Length: 329
Image (cartoon, rainbow, N blue to C red; front, side, top):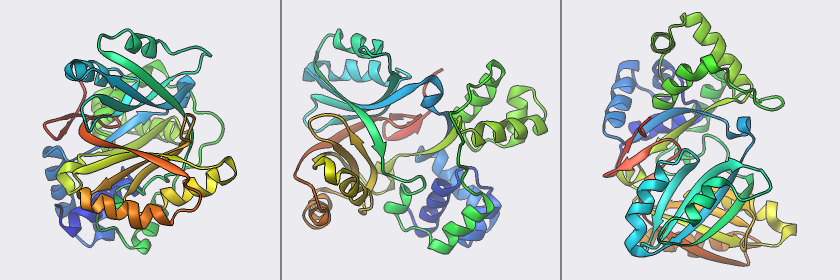
């Protein structure tokens, strides 16, 4: 379990992933050196990775949630192959060891994506249930703020005043071929300094700064914070598949997303039209959340639960023995 200072640092990074350590120190009440040391310790321990990612919309990709039912004796082999697919993120084996739930970004070509065709032919795969993500309710920066001790609102506002969130206009722009080295470096470490990025690309720091601004303002480049939540005091996770009426879809989805412990919520296609990810300290905590938190949400007409047994992959990190590691390239 983290102390309050580490927790505040993680919350600050969710609000502004590339915030300078000096600014983070100002809002958490610690020196720049202390913040840098604490962050690097958590990163070396495999607890946190800040990563820069290309918006899937650049390639016209559609987000979906996929439930893959497998023979238990094939789960390890399928998990190994699945997590190395670039289309796959946030992959987990569910309790019982016969299902993998993952997020996927694939082209919308009015036919089954090729990656799903390959999965369907994989030995041991029994069924694939694909649900398109229609709308995401969870706001950026809310992730760790819903779990550990969070920053006061004035500290969050101070971060946003120094680094106002960008509102992209139009569709994201396609990265140039020459951006490849820059984007690869940010995928490894989204907090890489402009000087370090200049070394990786062979550009000047001025050119790096200008290109980052273009990619960020267009919505092409965004930043995510991967966390090894088992190491951070939240070993229990569950995906909830919820049902509500179309008339109450937005109201119910927004209310679910606003609940404590909820780190992701979206509207989807499928037999249930809402999905949420909940992080808890254990089964008793989860039961309390179901019976006292979810019970207050209007419009929920039914639900089912997939409890996580083992995490395989985050947004841009593999999970090895509970540690976040960069995927091989």
